Structures are given as C-alpha cells and as structure tokens.
Length: 158
Image 1 (tube, rainbow, N blue to C red):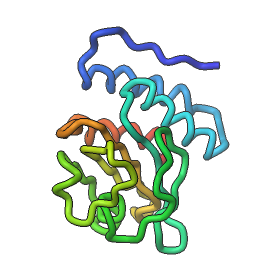
Image 2: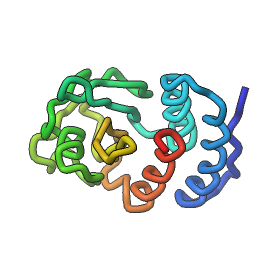
Image 3: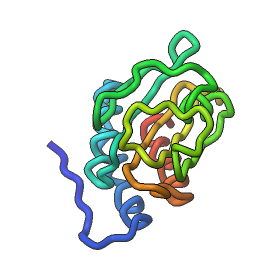
C-alpha cells in the first residue's frame, strides 16, 4: 500500500511539485488502466480536496464518465457542450472562474462554482478524454493548476 507524503503548509505549487514524483511512483509498474486512473484521481483529491474530480473519455463521439471522486455526476456529455465538451471541441484547457458565467455550462451540481478542464491526448495528438475538476469556490483554479495538471497527466498518459 502506498501513501502520499506532503509537508503541511506548502503552497499550491509546492504541493504539485511534491506530488509529481509521488504520482509517478504510485502508477509505476501497474498495468491496469482503470486502477491507475482511479489512483490518479484519489491522489489528487487527497492533496487538493476539490468538490469534484474525474475523467470523461471519448466513446462513440461523446464524453462518457470515467473514474471520479465527488458527488454523482453527469454520465454523458456531447462534443461542444458545457466546459468538458468545449475543451474537447477546442482541444485546449479551459479555466472557468465562475461557472454561472460560462455559456452552456452543464450544472451537474449546484455547489460547483469554478472549474478547470484539461484535454487528454493519445500518442497522435487526438483528444481521447478530459480531466475535469470542480470547486465549490469561485476563482479557485489558475495557471498553476493548468500547468501542473497537464504535467501530472503525462504520468498516466505518456
């Protein structure tokens, strides 16, 4: 059994920096994709305690819910719909400081106030899914989250 080790009082960036080598070690040697996805989400949630965190994967031209932590979520999202579908369609990360101000936001939970979505690519650059994080606080996510979440995803999707 593996445990994360982070000092108390670290800044957000320091938490990410400490988490990177630990995430690599956590996922190393395990060949089961779903086990690795589940531990990836659990590790991030253990460190950051976001309202909701999980994966959506492209299946038959829609995003389908994958491993996550948090309240019950939307199961399927159409391309170009909501923050997740828009990140997939535009093939770019999206930071949303206030979900109420995002046109077409899909409200899976009334408690979600801000969101970040990072596209996940296969080895030829196609979007195969997204990492979605929601916070119950406005303006919760920033460029630090964007940069390090993209870096952490490389541990899972090299």
